[in-house]
Image (cartoon, rainbow, N blue to C red; front, side, top):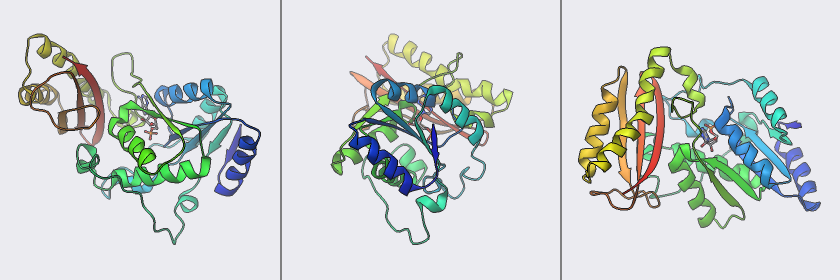
Length: 281
Ligand code: AMP
């Protein structure tokens, strides 16, 4: 496994591999890896000759009052995990390598970013699209793997790839959960034992939605209210959003029919957690 910190040698190595006819799978991450990340790595290993994982805590996708400085980092541990999975290359650049002093260019995906995390975290998707575009230009993967835990992010990246005529396949992967249902996240380390118990209210609210649907409820406002009340009945919780939308377009809905996405963002004290699920009526 090679660990590469600079763009130029990485491009060199990967263009040699391409010339040999080898396919490249790519998994972009911010590190502090868990089974969710590793599920993407395993899928990439299965379907590509070479797997590249990037570890970069991207400053441009964090707002001024967010957790950039305290975001968990442990490169040694990540390196061991990736070595175990048989990853070929880790790209681990520093901030100056990705954003030198004279940096000026950003990628803005419109409309689909004017809701959910796009409104709650202004500039977030501009930062995500920019770094992912840069990483795609550096790695030139055949396939790139993204988790549906960040549902809106997958739609934004797919849109960017289509709109900018990029030549790669985006592979969305299912959410990996702890045995009690909590969606895995690097940010879960912030949670105290009590907070973690409250954090379960996100995934448990899915059972409530199943129940409401079974009882024949189709009014989106009522379901959102029930889910919000349920989450807020747990200590330390504060709702950032609870929304029900069309899973393909992220258009808002009034009544339920067919498939719908329930998207949640909840603060448990200072920790912001997201989760989502697609239902069908
Ligand atoms: P991050 O390091 O949080 O930027 O995540 C890197 C990639 O891993 C993104 O595509 C995430 O959607 C994905 N990911 C994070 N958590 C999970 C999870 N619990 N299940 C599946 N994929 C995940």
